[in-house]
Image 1 (tube, rainbow, N blue to C red):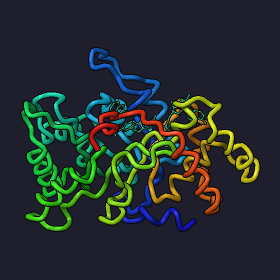
Image 2 (cartoon, protein in one colour; image 1 turned 30 degrees about the horizontal axis):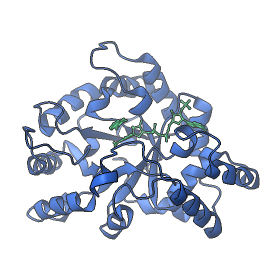
Image 3 (cartoon, rainbow, N blue to C red; image 1 turned 180 degrees about the vertical axis):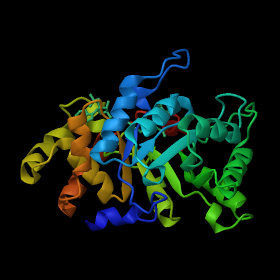
Image 4 (cartoon, rainbow, N blue to C red; image 1 turned 90 degrees about the vertical axis):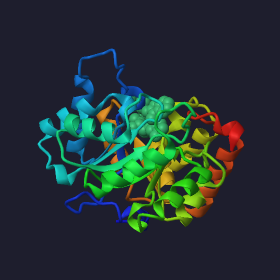
Length: 303
Ligand SMILES: NC(=O)C1=CN([C@@H]2O[C@H](COP(=O)(O)OP(=O)(O)OC[C@H]3O[C@@H](n4cnc5c(N)ncnc54)[C@H](OP(=O)(O)O)[C@@H]3O)[C@@H](O)[C@H]2O)C=CC1
Ligand SMILES: O=C1Nc2ccccc2C1=O
């Protein structure tokens, strides 16, 4: 095991297994709520990724993929305590509270607890029936009740996290935000101002969604992909493996997905090589010269 793996060692499945990088059930897998049929392709994709060795599944209220996750758990036969399931409450989506969403998700997963529960984003409008304060207090209560093992957020900037720390103070240090899941890749090294350093300084695990954006969203002919070509040969790895490895070396845990099993298999095979400092610095430099943001574009203007 390399040292890069150790930074998230505090996060283990209930049975004590170190978690793998995450397999996502959002983005290409999101199901339209009008579509009442379970997506069998996603069920099979989750089962295959579990069989490949993934033990970390990422879902959310807004993906409408809880039922697929539940069906895959059953079909795979994996013990619940050997898996890490992350779920998220989406502000402004409906009048349902985080507690309502957690209770429904537990039924849909067919489990008695969720490993990590996040607030999906910090953009609570004034007319939302649930405020940020209420949502966070409900997550704290869910942890006290044993319905969730860890609590955290997604797409939060430091100003939002400061508000949560102020609320958590009343409850004790086990009720602080433990994770911030943000967009991260070389072309977006900080979703909001200095957020990665802020999280690391506050002992918050950073998770990266869209870690492959330079490959999958920007077009293959960009300068970063050109730079990675000789590294693919040097390390005997694909560009996607190098991007995932870069993420890990930044002490950030990637969440990825693919409909191709060969790609999912490759994604787990990133622990046996190490980019050197000059290579990391060059990826940083090329990335900073080519900014790209796929989600939450309001951060371009606000923070
Ligand atoms: N908290 C939040 O706000 C957000 C959370 N997420 C979570 O993160 C997960 C992952 O996000 P996502 O943006 O999909 O992550 P990635 O950056 O890993 O992109 C995955 C996409 O890249 C493609 N891909 C995979 N491997 C390669 C390759 N070698 N070459 C070219 N393309 C490749 C896949 O397509 P193919 O199937 O063809 O391989 C897939 O469409 C989501 O499913 C969701 O769970 C995502 C967005 C926002
Ligand atoms: O998977 C996702 N797709 C999205 C699109 C917009 C905002 C959040 C998300 C996700 O989490």
